[in-house]
Image (cartoon, rainbow, N blue to C red; front, side):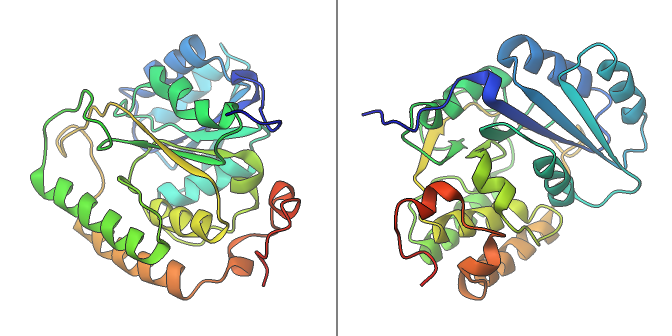
Length: 261
């Protein structure tokens, strides 16, 4: 069932692309986004790359007016890059696209569809909901993802299948009002806790996943997994709704909910 909150398609879509040393794939990702998705804007945040990624970004920005670059003078981590990117967006819908092609831009339209139809406030692209094309890689990573998702669900009471997915889409008013304080790869856990506090309508859709090995540039490690456990505990048990958002998004206030009680 659709409702009156339906938003217009891709021309209301902002894509945030955090980048760190992705000179081999960045241009291809951006060109595919332009060709397949044709969004309102693509905010690319170069998080202090040292491999020439910035030169590629400067060059491709001359070709496409939709691409808006942000440069960090030093590497500050994925979450810091996302914070910079979100603050620069203006679209009704905001989605994260990694620059390494582990996630297929052709599936963005499927990920944002529940928001476009007025059925969801947030959509996660799940690598585990229905098994689509997925590269077979590290079993320990699979177990870690399952454990972190279980622990997160235990405290949010939201039945997710993949909290660590890189494909997350939001109504713009939600993500731009969110106060994000974690670091490194902590965003995935923090945002899940905070959208649960806001009682967002959360959907998952199945996506493909073309993972990379560490030799191919994968960056997440054991330290990030241990930090994720702490973030799950902290943001669910010790961070209030008032501290999670600069302002409660207008559409949630209109619902007359008891969010601030």
